[in-house]
Image (cartoon, rainbow, N blue to C red; front, side, top):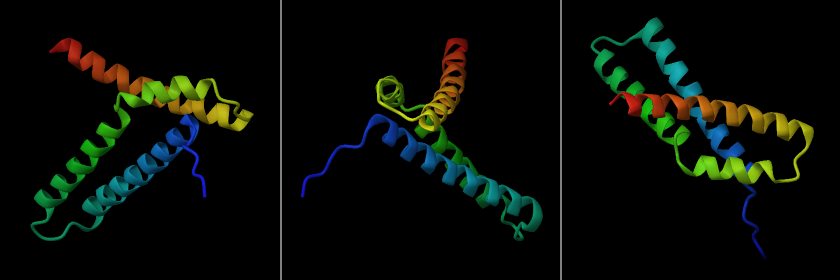
Length: 106
């Protein structure tokens, strides 16, 4: 059985599916903090939310994303996939520009 490496577009959609799941989890935990915080649970909840945010940030600012975006733009994609790729690129560009802007200020 031969296995084929995923295309750059497939790698990006897999990553952004994971990012969506993590963001969804963070939103649920944040809502739960506001609606149903256990007694003395604020510190642990804040720590968990900060950890999820760090994971999301690390995934969104991975240097390999730029290469995947460049490769995916050369792939034979449907109109829907091209639209999805534009949204992924926009999201990555915004995140990357923020990171570069902060680094420039340091």
